[in-house]
Image (cartoon, rainbow over all chains, first blue to last red; front, side, top):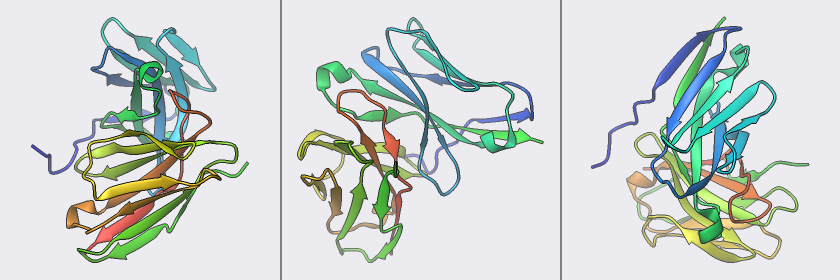
Length: 116
Length: 113
């Protein structure tokens, strides 16, 4: 049945510490994954992506790790800043090579709060 | 390069009415996807258009429809609005279809009374 409201997992970290946000996915056919950041009143902002032929990818202050064996994805943010406070979503694109489409399935999100 | 733009940003409609939302993708992007975001269901895929053709459709009733124009701009339409259609409607554009980076617009906040 429908839920009244999604209960977002929350993560609070001290400014300057590293943050790790986790995501589990269920479709073993998923081939492409994206992390998004969404601030209040804004649309999701692309952070970093990774394809299933990789297990790690690094960006500026961010690293995404993919463990296909246990269908787990994580986003690591180094030296977390107050501006990193937001809701973070992982999204999977199921078998885009087969479907030829861009439909993303989003997780429920994690609310990151950075304590100054 | 300008980002994805959506108009209008806010909209209030009455049950039973219909509404049309507009999305202009990033210049050069040919794929436009639409998503609905609600507190209860989170972010859900509505449909994707690429080269004026619907590529894929999510699990939404036929009241939700869309189209894409030759300049890649897209519109989505919701007919016979219901209270449950109140949501943030997000548009995302991508260079190509088939698993590529999608960039989102700010969304249109639709309230149905």
